[in-house]
Image (cartoon, rainbow, N blue to C red; front, side, top):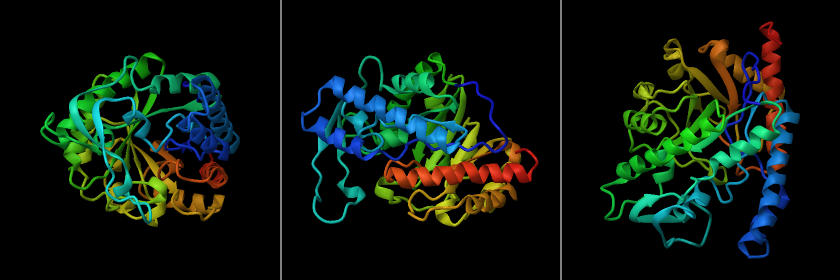
Length: 344
């Protein structure tokens, strides 16, 4: 329910939920041709129902559909339907998994999406029809979409590819708003070679004219629970403040709550902070008190009335049982702090 009232210091998720074991079996069966489209749709509906139920049972205040319809990673499913790109052969296939084993692409023509868009509107409509708590929609940003696409001879460089995706995303976001989305989160990487000012500019291009509350998640990478980039926000602020976003969603727990001093400098800007207080890359099962202690540390630099709490990143690479334990601790930790503030 998009209009559901939220408590002080709402708990939420970044996006993806831990997939059930049968989800992985279903995806393999689909890839092997052992399932038809109707079988896949049924399985994905069941997976969304499961993710919604898990989050609501855990007591999370604002939920998603768990991004369970995104079959391989975060944007890989979209690359399969995007026109104008071709895969580049992976050069290293043996040994431990690393980011150099991700399939990359080259632009061979103008990048286009299928009629009807990327399918994020369909995801949102199902979530809206089945959730009883507040909801948000999530969408990868232009740098995320463009990060694995070589410009080829069609585009001048990586930024030009990202600018094209900003156009694509803008249409998707406008369609989300038309479908009733009131809160939309854009997910982008802290790539290092793209400045905070450039990230803000691309965010603004992608969200231009989008009449919804906006969140800007800045990610250090989380595929198979592994970071990809230098895990610091210092190079990006204060230039990132040029982004027309209502909320910054940032990672703290997996970095021992580092850089709260940095972020606290901008508390007077009037933005909301989505503070990462759950380490999604570690198997340590946080307790509600551990989460509450992390929230207390954030409250030393950020006002409670503009604070959301969430995991550092999504749980798409986490076992479902681990994910569920962590979001239960997240919701319980937020309730503890609310009670201490007299708002519980």
